[in-house]
Picture 1 (tube, rainbow, N blue to C red):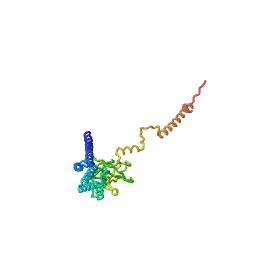
Picture 2 (cartoon, rainbow, N blue to C red; picture 1 turned 90 degrees about the vertical axis):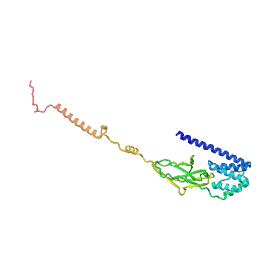
Picture 3 (cartoon, one colour; picture 1 turned 30 degrees about the vertical axis):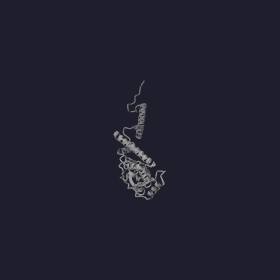
Picture 4 (cartoon, rainbow, N blue to C red; picture 1 turned 180 degrees about the horizontal axis):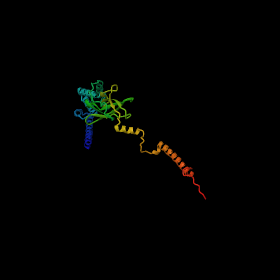
Length: 294
């Protein structure tokens, strides 16, 4: 586990260092354009764009700088091709150089208004369907085409009964996949139906690819919790009426007091008869009559 964590941390650290180096390279090209070193800027921008580890924003920045240097260096055809590529990747792109010259501003505006065919971005994803247990479903997306033009992959989801869709940005993993989770809500013993769709967007926020839609979303189901046999048994015992065992307290039973009362009455009658007999003596004729003479 520690080795895995180390590898992940090392990968993120390496990526961050590489991005910092790319940003420094972009800053150097911008400096060359500012000081009219157009041939050097064109050459270094070409080297930058040959890299495969650029983010979508970094690549767009490199294309802007390349087109600006080409326009300033009177390379009109090359500039038009560069701008066509830029606006096919990001139809909503805006020139970031606030001090750009009128020819540069005009060339960028024409390229944008030409609406070149956008790059093809294909999202690879399979719905989890009905989950095997109640848990937060994981949504994983892979970009099959046009990945270097995508800045974000967004997930929109709605639980049954929700008034609208909630939207989140998926995390990009080092392997190039985008991953996120849908939260679990509602009563634990009830299944939850979830509608969702996915979209890939450029740095300007322009949608480049989609899987599902608000009108025709994808679907999955989160099952409710199923009580175990042990839980059911415990519930049955808890709800069952108490059972009176033969070894309980007999004094709490009604029959005990009835019997005790009957015995007491019988004993009282017997004792009464015995005392009366003792005081009266024998009946005449039973033992004879004896008269004492003086």
